[in-house]
Image (cartoon, rainbow, N blue to C red; front, top):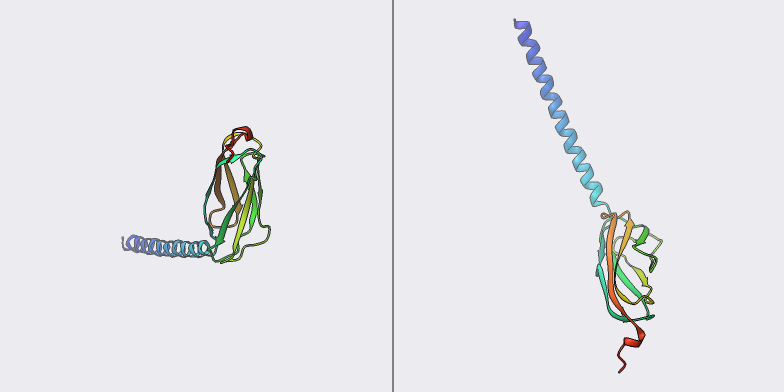
Length: 148
């Protein structure tokens, strides 16, 4: 009988030690993950939606999204996707260091008359790997634009 009590005590002790080791492992993993998250680049855009308002047909459709890297690591933009071929992005190919400012130019084809709303997705190594931006507006036919 005392042999069984000893085995149960050893089992409880072993279980307790295993639980403590598991807790420390989880705590260390979470701390390590949190440190990795803090060592990322962080986009801070001056504006995330650009409203062209009413724009004349065939007018200049280029607009600029300016941003600053407010993180602790360089941001590298791997790709910028748009929702259609009528929206063409130009973006920096070099790394944007912490504290640096850069921009993404978007050229919308203003030869198409009517309202538009397009999404631009910036893919990078930043804390938000897929950042969504948007442009919107209304292209008015040249013969309908009021002249002063």
